[in-house]
Image 1: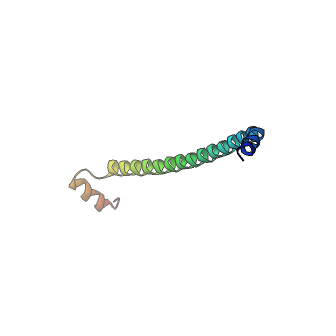
Image 2: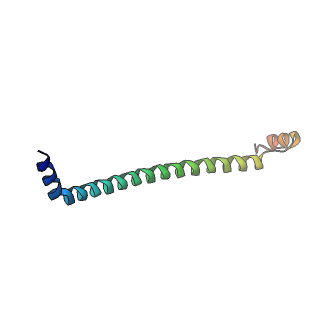
Image 3: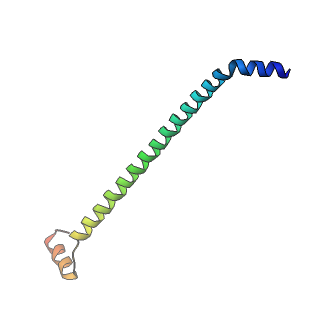
Length: 79
């Protein structure tokens, strides 16, 4: 029995190594694509966060500084 197994393995060892290498290659490519997708999602999310913060900063810069400025804007209808 052991002789059959060793005989079969010795004649098919190169095929098994080839199939194993192919399986590892496909797995590596799929995991790399998955990581690339996650990185793209993180980039998009970070881009949205930066845009929101910039909009908040612009709004803060345009805000009235004192109560008198606020009253003046309300009277002029610019607020």
